[in-house]
Image 1 (cartoon, rainbow, N blue to C red):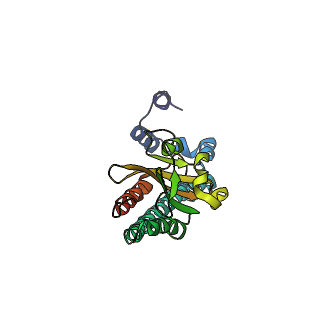
Image 2 (spheres, rainbow, N blue to C red; image 1 turned 180 degrees about the vertical axis):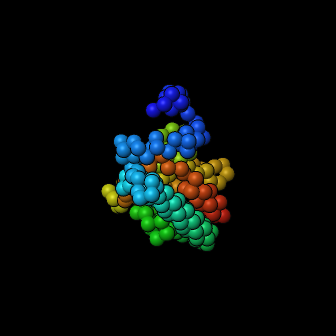
Image 3 (tube, helix red, strand yellow; image 1 turned 60 degrees about the vertical axis):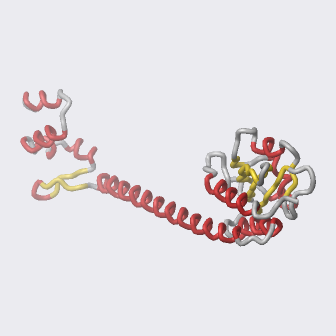
Amino acid sequence: MDGSQGELTAQALSPDEVRRFLSDNPEFLREDDGLLAELGLKVAAGNVVDFGPAALARVHAAHQREAEMRQLLEETARANFSAQAQTHGAVVDLLDSRNHSDLARRVDELARTRFGLAAGLIALEVEGAPPAGWRHLVDGQVDMILGGPQRLARMGFAPTALGLFGDVGPEIGSMAMVRMAIWEPSRTGLLAFGSADPEGFTPDMGSELVAFLARVVERTAERWPLL
């Protein structure tokens, strides 16, 4: 190696400087078998530097990662579109309710048929009996289930909520629950969905979809007075 090569390699080189150096000194790469092997290259006929198996493998791996990422994005987009479509259908179903009992039935039905869950329910803190089909809660029970008076939703598994699901309680592996305020003066309630899959709802999931459905349930339930 001459002095100019030693001087260049002793410094931090930019890509343009490396390109210029290799252009001016083509033998530097062609004659260094160790460097060619490390880069996964080889010299083919006519002094053409050819890609070897290692270089091709790296290129293939990069394309594979790109394809996998594109597939993941496409699957996520399809899942989001499907969830939005199911949510729109669920809203129409809820708005078609004829009374409190029918509303509770529709919540459970859409949970099972539209979202593939184990159950859906409406619960209400009330001194007497709740509307037909609704679960009864005592004063302060929503705070206990959600984990405090400031929490509006809870995603994941909550042992204190298993009793709400009645006979299907033993099947529930995770829940999505949102606080509701219905009527004037407001009564505290809860919209809850249960999944048999322990990973169906997890604490790191957003609760926006369930909260949106809770608002629809609130407005629908307020059509009829609480007797």
